[in-house]
Image 1: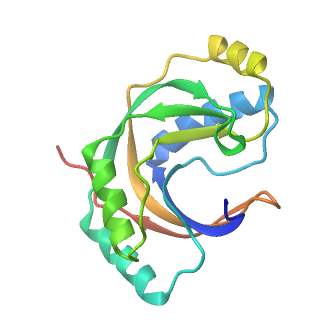
Image 2: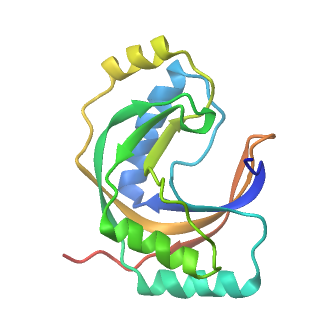
Length: 174
């Protein structure tokens, strides 16, 4: 059963990429009515509660981990209310490594069904409307930079996604 009130860890993007992704999200939400939320890629969760040690360790981890270049694959959709319309991203070893490092901070057991994506709309939208929207979407950039991790409180019943803390990752260097 899904926890409707919980803490999640999100990945968020460089300022430039956030502006780019928000412009796409705004375009999508004109067609598909959706609750408002910050653009993100869900990394870990849900957590029922988090203690001070976890938060301190998360901050320390962010100082050690480097920003990650994500490859954007395509626009897609599903019947899941919280994955209604999204951008599919690659499941890189760097992304998996970051997730595993976060999960190790709390002995959280992660499932192996991780499907990284950037949500653009939440809701129960008709397949026809989503097919039509995909046909009208602009060409995607190839790469974006995941540059911070965020601690978020979520109440799905009240459509609340509140960022509590942001932790910048180390700058990417090739």
